[in-house]
Picture (tube, rainbow, N blue to C red):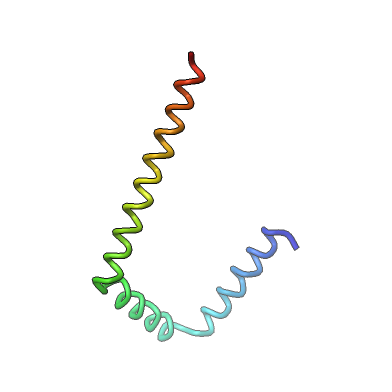
Length: 73
């Protein structure tokens, strides 16, 4: 089974299971997600993660620009 086939089967299964769970379960999940994301500890971890990703992106950008500048000479 290829990746695309597995992805389609997984998406279809998720849709069917989600439809069976109904609106009430969806609301429970969303309420739980809201409690998690509203927690200051989660927000702190998320902001630290974003800072790490931003720093990594800047380093990669700098390395790429340095490499490109080296190829032009």
